[in-house]
Image 1 (cartoon, rainbow, N blue to C red):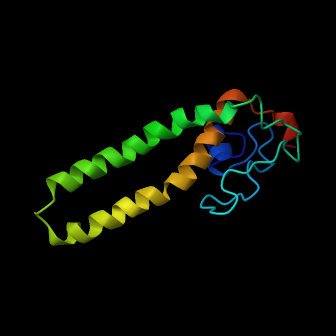
Image 2 (cartoon, helix red, strand yellow; image 1 turned 135 degrees about the vertical axis):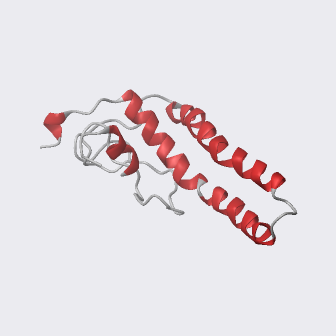
Length: 127
């Protein structure tokens, strides 16, 4: 991942405009405290993270298809392999718990995707 790309900003949870400031107060991908708490502005370039009221409700439309792409194949594989493999009977519940744990980073990444769709990268700010 190279700085200056959308994927860098999204996966590193960095400001979409300068790629230096953090999007979240707790900037780890798997954060369980202050899960969706964001600063009002980027500390480096002063980009406003709260563009308009209710802006991040649109992030639900980004996270929903991502979750479906993960959950639907899991459910179908659980239905198909229900009685056929003993190992799968142990593995399937663990897989479901993992999918619930992935909800945390998916919510954060969907906010980063939404901001990257809205805000353009500015090369002059990253130097």
